[in-house]
Length: 258
Length: 328
Ligand SMILES: Cc1cc2nc3c(=O)[nH]c(=O)nc-3n(C[C@H](O)[C@H](O)[C@H](O)COP(=O)(O)OP(=O)(O)OC[C@H]3O[C@@H](n4cnc5c(N)ncnc54)[C@H](O)[C@@H]3O)c2cc1C
Ligand SMILES: Nc1ncnc2c1ncn2[C@@H]1O[C@H](COP(=O)(O)O)[C@@H](O)[C@H]1O
Image (tube, protein in one colour):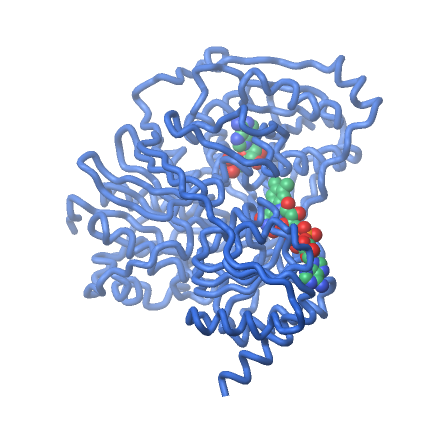
């Protein structure tokens, strides 16, 4: 079974994240780059279920700047078999539509039975790419899964929908996305790190995928303006001396909040 | 055949399992009314939506298209996407607005990919300039405001639930059934569905004016009840940090933060929440923030208007008693 896990390099959310006020792009230098946590959970799912699947091969596909290779290698150290990295300067600032086209083309080129994505990336916060990719690939999409069961020709799982909980299923090939209720990714061990050095890494450009990032026939979403909100500052801080509850009640009432 | 105004905005309205319009409807139609003429599309399984036309018109839809595509309750997203494609063909709108819910995002993603439309996600407002519809976003936890527009064509915009306060004027009900040719696109099938009973009489977290949130500091599911008690005294919704959700004290839907719900209430009370950056991302645009934490260095204090360094198990019961006493 050919499993593709979609992973992304993101600015570490534990640090201060910055947008460049001129270009509107994320300032990559402003914070440390890490693998998106939800992508690690998706890979963990693939690694766990691969054990019970015949000839499982796990390929990580990512569209990210060239400098992301080091971050992405962690996925190989965790246990993925192969990395397909689409790195192209012309794709910097790609909108959702272009990103979906690129990833769908790379997935098709690699060949797949199941694509596993995160439901939401921590920087894009789009939560739409897997749906777009499923549409472009012409396959079923089961989103926001909190449990997953993969068999030779079918994937099923629990989906926490807006009004309740459902069980969903799809024949393969298919795309699924998972939520952060899945276990965190494993830490690479020494053996994994050594093995990763010998694993294949394929680097692709948009041209390799026959995609023209500057093509004008498809509408693209562009940023018109970016502004920074003034940072919030701290107000009153009191230490409880046995009457903090009373004081807080006073504050709420004075401000008409209670 | 009906004609549609030049400045039509096509709004996809979701229905609840019991057939009513989802809560997001009022905000979506309100947003649409600010930039054009709201035309609603309501998609449901055969016979499931009751009074959709009246309900949507009451919230400002000038015309209401109702579709009952085959498999609407048995296949994920695709039947709704097919209906939306048919509606867009008919209406030729200046923009398509969809709720930024789980289902809404699935539909928006597929629809935008199918029709090659520019897609803008999680907007908190819309406006119109000479060239068309602009989507306004609040990103990185409200640290930045970003405006986006398509290079050309009608954008597909998902709108953050609870973010739009504007309401459209009621319109007179005018509805028409929509014929939906199936696309044949493969979809995941829905094998079973269990409606989540709404057990709470409290306000819904999304769009609530007041929120009381609890974190790991509550230490157990039993103790988390203290959050509920304060919420009830204040008439607030209940939220939680990811740590509290991961511990199983409250359902997933309570999570506030980057990967949970974003709220902008008048009052946000954080109890035993450290204020990790991912939590702050979902609440730091609240008007007034109150925090109770026993660690004086907890990051939540950096953004709190009123911070109490203390044990929440002492402070909160006293606060509740004090507020209850003054109410009498
Ligand atoms: C990609 C990613 C996404 C994330 N998304 C989210 C998200 O959406 N929402 C979210 O909340 N988190 C999110 N997190 C997790 C986040 O980093 C924190 O781990 C989490 O918010 C911590 O929850 P907490 O504040 O309840 O727990 P802790 O950080 O453990 O804080 C508990 C606090 O309670 C205080 N306390 C303990 N006992 C008492 C007492 N008796 N009285 C008063 N105070 C007390 C302690 O001093 C402490 O400050 C995310 C993390 C990642 C990596
Ligand atoms: N540049 C990318 N490369 C690979 N996968 C991606 C990329 N962007 C998003 N994804 C996948 O799509 C999921 C949802 O992302 P998003 O739509 O940005 O919230 C992520 O969790 C990833 O699995």
